[in-house]
Length: 64
Image 1: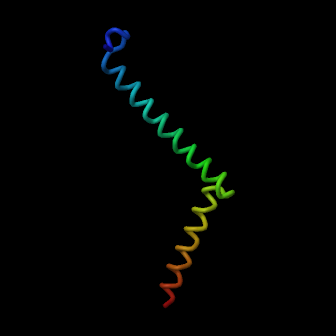
Image 2: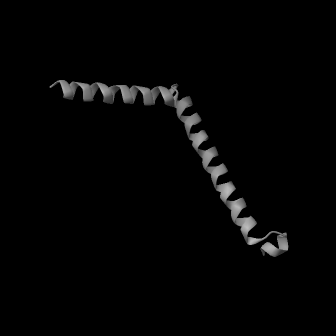
Image 3: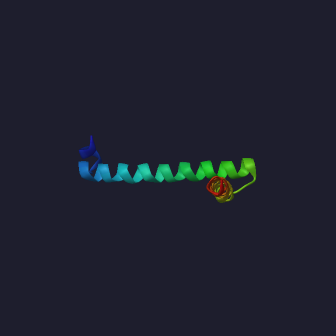
């Protein structure tokens, strides 16, 4: 089948590999964009808030 298309097996694997990462990147960006539209917040802001809460909790435990 690949011979009918004029490509070798190695080329087909490289194309599929590239296609996988393109689709993965597109889905990741789509999920981020949808999350930002739903919540009205950027994901980076949410991650910063989570990290700050964890740091405050850890600091509180260390002081006890």
